[in-house]
Image (tube, rainbow, N blue to C red; front, side, top):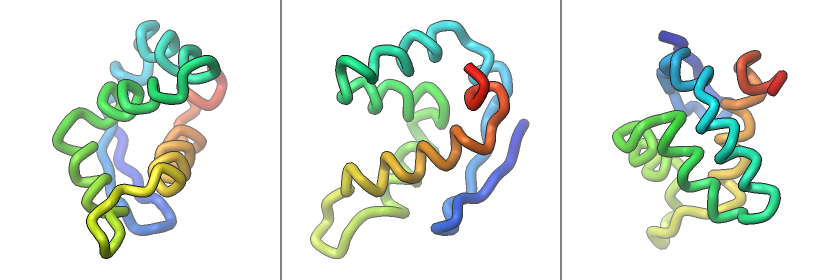
Length: 87
C-alpha cells in the first residue's frame, strides 16, 4: 500500500494494483472529452470510503464540495504517484 498526504492535510492510502489498471488509464483519458469522468477516476483510485473522506475534507462551510478543490487534491495525489504521473 502507498500512503500519502496532500498539502491540505488529506491523508490517503492507495492500492498500487489500482494504479496499474488499464481501465483507470481509460477513465483518465476520457476526462479530456468529459470532465465528469473525474468522479469515476476518484472512486477508482481512492475507493468510495476514501472518496467520501476527501469530499468531507474539502467541503465548504455551506456544505458544497468545490470542484476546483477536488481537482486540485486529486491532481496532487496523481502527481506524487509515478505509476500515474508517467502514464
